[in-house]
Structure formats: C-alpha cells, structure tokens
Length: 136
Image (cartoon, one colour):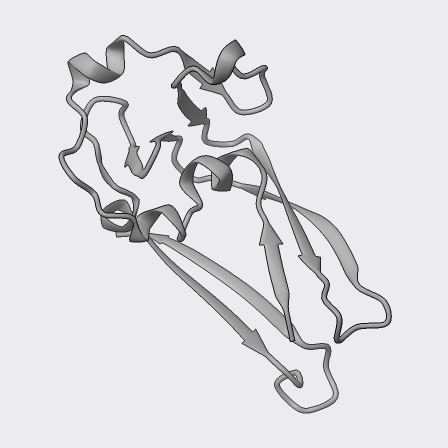
C-alpha cells in the first residue's frame, strides 16, 4: 500500500520529518539568516527560487493535505486538515528555530512519528494514519 503525505509549505520547508534526516552540517548563524527574507505561511514566496526563511506563526491554521494513492487502489482519497501550532516555528532548509535566532536541525527541535494502522484499533474502525509532532 502506498500512502503519501503531501504537506504544504511547512512540510515542504521542513519536510517536518524528511528534512530532519538530511546531514545537518553547520547550523546557520543569526547573521546569515538575517540577510534572508522571512515569508509568513500563506504569503507569496520570493521570486526566482531565492532562499528564504519560512515562518509559521502560533495560532494560525496550518493546512495539511493528506493523500492516499497508488496502483493498489481503484479509488484513492485526499483531504485537508487544519492544525494550529502552539509555538511559532521558523524553517530554513533542514534547520528550525523557535525564535529566529538559534537554529538547529529539525530533528533536534521536533520529534516526528508517522504510523499507519490497518485495520483500525478494533478491526471495525477506519484505518489510522497518525502523524505526531512533539517539541523536544
């Protein structure tokens, strides 16, 4: 079974889990980050694929699109969930920050787990695709 989570801008920048597995290298300094534009989620990205910092403010609905597809299905499915962050998060490539000054690899800031449970817990309920994200 193929399942795919297409998580819009935050996960594109954060891949929340995916980018955390990239080799971190040296975290950017506050001075390096200060030279980049900060784009708040929902606003236009800079032209010409320029580097930028993505900011997802606390209390703002974050749309997360989920998709299930593949050749095993005669009909796939998709839905959009709206979650709200408790703390604002800045993202730049494979790095994240809560204050925009101290940067670390995503996996040092966020613990992410993805679970697929088929059948549901009691065999009757719907299958569960659970993405859990916790601050470390």
